[in-house]
Image (cartoon, rainbow, N blue to C red; front, top):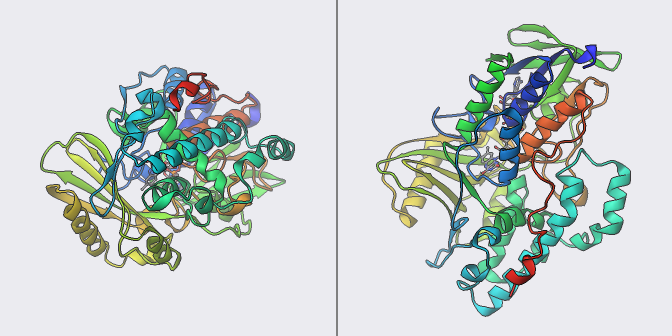
Length: 474
Ligand SMILES: Cc1cc2nc3c(=O)[nH]c(=O)nc-3n(C[C@H](O)[C@H](O)[C@H](O)COP(=O)(O)OP(=O)(O)OC[C@H]3O[C@@H](n4cnc5c(N)ncnc54)[C@H](O)[C@@H]3O)c2cc1C
């Protein structure tokens, strides 16, 4: 290890910061993690202590397996969610797709659709797989791509991602299925009507490879990673808010924090990239912020098992008109995660922390909306508004800048000007938002600081690569 990376400060104890701290500590660095919150987990660590306050959908199980293997930790059981999610249309129709690799066939999914819908579903799933396979090596399982790599992707495969088309046009497939396909773009904070067609690849991760239930949930995973890091000697300074980074000669020398000055040889910022830019005195990015969320953590009177549900509004496009106007939607898409005697209800919200007013009021409205469609006995609940999520990122945006337009869908890289000894990681930069990608980014950003090669934490096999695919598609 270079003497310049002996003492590393990691800002942020979310999934990316924890992964970075662990890799650095395993390599023998002295590591201190600074976080403004009181406990590890970042976006998963607000509200009730025994709940995740954010991530509930587990995808890319190979990343979790790989990380646990690298750390010598035992991974709790991971079970495939069957179906992936149940979708409820306002008229009472439901759709419960099975992930192709889990079910081993498309038949149970297609049997729920009309003949035309089944044709569209197969066509769009095929397109999602193709886009994912084309994009994954460059945009997910490697360091931030160079200009040359981008040009190579654009020339050899990029044209197959329909760069001239919007997502909304690309996935047009009738009133029942179109919102279904559009919604996957929100996993990166996009307004689906402003997203490029290439974001359609996100759906493959869930519908091809599967959604998983991780025993204990993602909040517990953060606790496990934190305990492992502490056992390796990582020091955690919770309740420490970074206010400014002082740099000289292209290197960051120290941080001004709410608990005094702090010095280190090298830095990982695993906080929102927009915050890091501000601390370094760099001008803000011009790209608009992506979506925030409004959530309820619900304690239930009885154990309701494990499941994901989506309840569509009467008019999906109208929800987006509300969000674009900066309003909380009057008739939002409801996402519900059931996890034993706990549940998590989430709707899209604009990244405007001031918007919620009295969060219990809108929260109560959401609860009534849910109970009208899905009876659920709730013993206790609390709301989490964009103002709560703003504690972990600018404006409460869950994934940083909005991935709109073709350029917007490229996630920013890991370096910032004037800070050669700082690596920026996490859900607001490459390879993107979501827990598995944030873990990959933290692990590999730290690897870059240590001069190590890229480690994709799993196997490079892109789901859907095997030849059995051909027999699965009728
Ligand atoms: C409601 C919601 C639902 C989601 N659903 C899913 C899902 O189902 N599946 C999925 O995979 N992902 C989901 N996500 C996204 C996922 O949670 C994030 O992409 C991921 O947790 C990001 O991790 P991170 O470590 O990059 O950032 P964060 O978790 O944001 O961590 C950043 C850390 O930096 C700290 N910090 C910020 N400012 C300062 C400061 N000034 N000083 C010191 N520390 C600071 C914060 O306190 C925080 O702990 C969801 C997110 C939310 C909020």
